[in-house]
Image 1 (cartoon, helix red, strand yellow):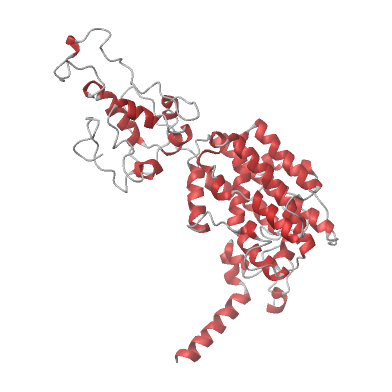
Image 2 (cartoon, helix red, strand yellow):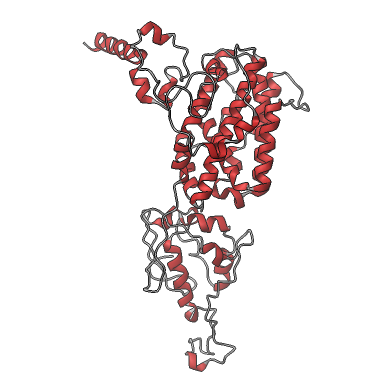
Amino acid sequence: MDSSSSPSGLPAHPPISPSSSISKCPAFSSGCPFSKATSRSEIESLMASIPSSHVSGYVSSDFSATMQKLHSAYNKSPDAPSSDDGSVPSADELTDDEKPKQECPYKGLVTTDGVPLSKALGKVKMFPGAPSPPSSPSSSPPSSPSPSLATALKKGTAVSHKEAESVSFVKNFLRGRITVPVYSVLVANLYHVYLVMEEEMDRHGEKAMGALYLPEKLKRADRLLADWRFLSNSSDTSFPPSTRCTDEYCERLKYISSTNPKLLVSHAYTRYMGDLSGGQILQRCAKKAMDLPKSGEGSSFYDFPEIPEGGHNFKNKYRDLLDELPLSQEEVDDVVGEANVSFVLNMRIFEELDCIMNVEGSSVRPLEDALKFSTLWKTAKVGEGECPFGFKGPNPHGAAAAPKKKETPSKAAADDGARCPWPFIFFHDPATGVRDWQTWASVALIGSIAYMKFR
């Protein structure tokens, strides 16, 4: 709508500024979606096309104000009762049947998933910095802001994230110690996990996932199946087998889907965000170690052509969408707890591969231990010596009980401790990476080359 008029004859709002909170809504990103509406019925049709998750996830106070304007302007709209000469009659001139109802004419509308628009608007979450609607003396005190799910997930899974990197299979993968047969088993396992996860997300859609339901951008199962068939030289009609740990992972996905489908967000976060982060490093390692085609066969799982904006920009947007989910603090804690379960279930698949490869000292933790992480993460703290989660092997987080001795460069280079190797450490722990001798050796080398070239 422009600032002076609209086709419907209703009072127009000022042009939507790019800095306005409502401009963050995709429907309003190109201007007002109601700008071409010529009657109340057309406005109703537009409103009825809005899913409730869109309303509750994106709408700011500007939209609420717009609804109030539409309500107050109803008597003056073309759809309101008018006299023969086209003028709007006063309330005294109308019969009881002609008088407009006191409640909003749009109150009875429902969204695409059957939720009443008025109910969806009741769950509206304001954008950061958006003006709050004016309060009346009788209104209740404003509720506390919704907790940041993205921040809670990052902090609440930090320990299990680091522990996942300490599994021998992951360390060997990063060092290029991976073979096609073992990698094929990993790809087959991931195919089954993603197949079940994505089927369950499709079953619930936006009702459980909100705006995080982005199958056209994120689905991986088909790519994993194609990769496995290439790696195993199988026909287009064959499907891979699954291992015991994979089956138990899939059963967990089916269980939460049937009992609390919002927890699918936890698995989507750990899987997709991981694929867009460390997964890109693993793809390079896989191609180099197994001489996989540069065209992508065998490693297409790590490619996201449907995300042209790039992984970094998409991950930032994904975190924003996490924060827009209308969750209570208790629900946020549940999502973080399940994300930790997801990390440990994934680690069990890696541990199982270590056993398949006959890695010395390898074993798979019991399933019941993995499921305890739905609540254990709340009390786990970065401790000294042993891992606070009770994991076996070196503790990759926290200070050791005894002070560390100063290591020589040769010892540091050969360190087989539980930490991500250089230079991959920079992706999640740059402070540690800066202290590595390899970093300073690289700086000195580059500096010498630059000096010789430009002196």
